[in-house]
Length: 129
Length: 232
Image 1: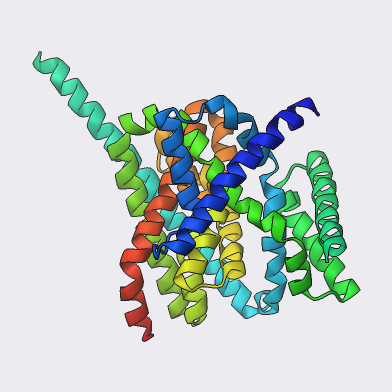
Image 2 (image 1 turned 90 degrees about the horizontal axis):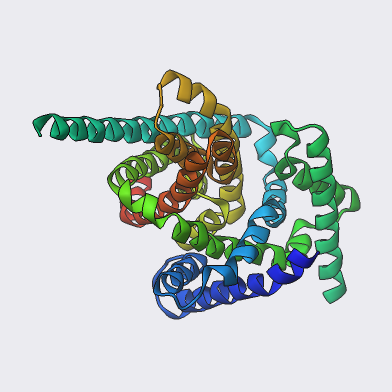
């Protein structure tokens, strides 16, 4: 309970950033989600030392640990698409499952290749010495 | 209206806590609170005959918290900035490719299978974390709840594929395992990668953030092309 009391004002601080980001995205014609602008601003503030990690860390931990709760209304919104139970739903499943495999294969393979390339180079430079 | 808001939020929290309890007893993917709690809400709404729009208006505050979650991602990003910078080539090239393939595969299969333009636009932010995906979907003219559905299914598909792909692709480096999980399964992937190790977990976190940024960039570069292709 005490950790909650500590974390709640921090969540409020995060909320201020989210709100400011939303406001900026409304005022400026940027087409970037406001929450993303808020994230960028908080990151900059942390980097510049204007905000200390300890001021927001507990809040972030709390928000992350209860994250699924905030998704519940959005996921329940699926009920607006009853067609998902039929043939179309099956098609959606095909799109998602096959696409995910492609995405993960390309990401994993490229990362692993680049890592191996870097490793070979490092070894070469050692041998050249 | 205030009473209605408090009630809908309380009911949502109740379902969420109950779903978490259930998941603790039966820790399998199908009993995840991300599936059980919304299912409970749907059944409740259907039985009581309350239109979804009213529930949505009542739980506005919870949906607004998704923006706060996105903002909070600045913290792991800040904490892991050193690792991110030392592996930036690997991270940028693998995630840029992953994000591009996610968009191209999603849009083309959605169009080929005849799901319609709205679905094809909504599928673009599919392979990124939900709060950012919903925001992106709104700003490119998709349907946020449909995007949410695509994202959730993607998360589950990613966690489902993960172990098989690690084995068959012979992924050894913790960062590449983490990147793959973060790009493919977002938050669920972060949890899954963290089970494998700390570096896996933090690179998955980085992949969730950087992958989202890449997807946003690709989406705005490709959107005119996609819209022209769809004849809009």
